[in-house]
Image 1 (spheres, rainbow, N blue to C red):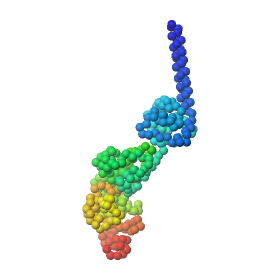
Image 2: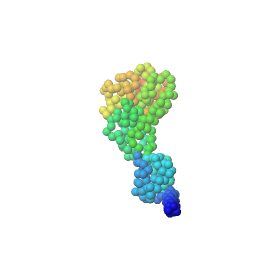
Image 3: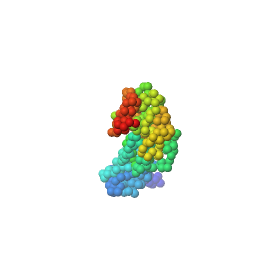
Image 4: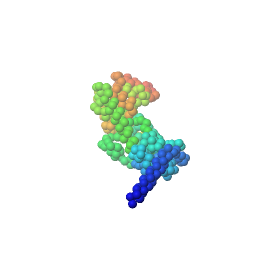
Length: 338
């Protein structure tokens, strides 16, 4: 009886060894055999929330790999089954399942881009995000306050709080993630620049700097003039003079603005009417870029208190009202008396 048991145990061990040997051979062959994806499967998408099992099964359905269980086993043996990243990945003939795992865990997915333009309003940025065909849209029909709450910053006014830049992202990125990233980039730039600001500025906080930067952004036609425009507004704030800047009037009019500012618009009292109200507007009026922020915190050295458009994208700057009125006559009224 003892001898029979020994023989059975020997056969079990041999059988187990053979099974393990076959499995190891299959796994090694699978790991190093090149894939040959069909033409319609040269781009593979891993959706957010996918696990290694669903990924393997989807690749098997698309005929990218032959055995999903070997792929799962390979991922577990490599210790990467929980490290795959969502996104789209370009597949090429010659890659192996091991290469695929390296690719899926490296995050080197196909990247798309969306550019947020300096001077856009928050609403213009939302429109661009809503029209992007790659982003996942979860913010439709939400109010501005609801959007700020969803991205994690409730009770903040959204205008001006997002950094204008070109952002790259993989497919599957949500509009919520996009906005949160743009918000956080703005805070990083703003706080860094605020810490390096000039002394004796008439600004109490980085948020006031952001407001002033947004006004500078909307007033600037030629980039080199930003520090000069900043200097005019800074000096006016120091003297408690009204800023008297048209972009704030336009922002205050909102959807009622039809493309022309009329005299009655200058008399319409809104929180953004800097012809009637002294100081800064209650919020930014646009998304300022880094140059506008730096101009607000490092204005040029000048005694100018006025500027008027010359009609070519640049401005004439004046230190006195008399000089300013003459410039208005010259550049805006074609020499006619005001």
